[in-house]
Length: 212
Image (cartoon, rainbow, N blue to C red; front, side, top):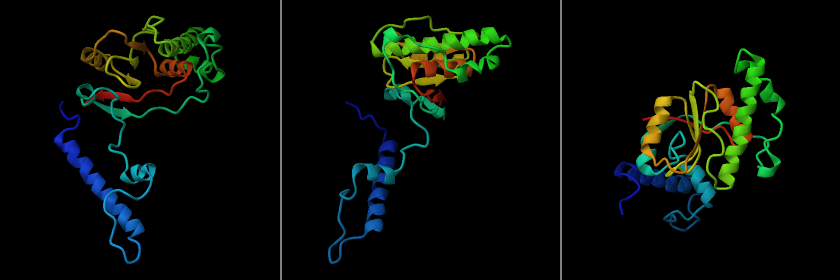
């Protein structure tokens, strides 16, 4: 089995571990009359990880290595949804929150049409989360509004998290890199609708990725 890390990645990891060991030695110093401790024996795992710092400035693409290395994060994940608990399918999506309804004018020049699209996106988010929770196929049509310019992928073979794209070309490129069976995705004309969708699904807006 081949290593999941390249030679350069391994060298970078070793260098960071060496810096971490030196950081702990400089911070605490050896007990009086005893030689410095060797190895990574001081501090709990959380402290060591914090001292080491993130392996990269941006989150990596949550997919198998052959796919992950082809993408870079250009915008990090949005804020967590306030009410993050997902109920049951029987409860339904419920009413659209007031703060989402107030954004209708930014979706369409026609307030009624904008509210309809916000409501549709919010409802689609709920049913998308339902499909995830019940390991079901996609319940509704993936295209919520057009022309599609924002894409969110919640499930795909080889994908281990939620991702989004702001280009049809980028989305098509990702689609060509994975198996299409069992995947769950939605597309929107505006980023506001994507945000309403994520709130309906009770998830943070996923990080935005572009090809490397």
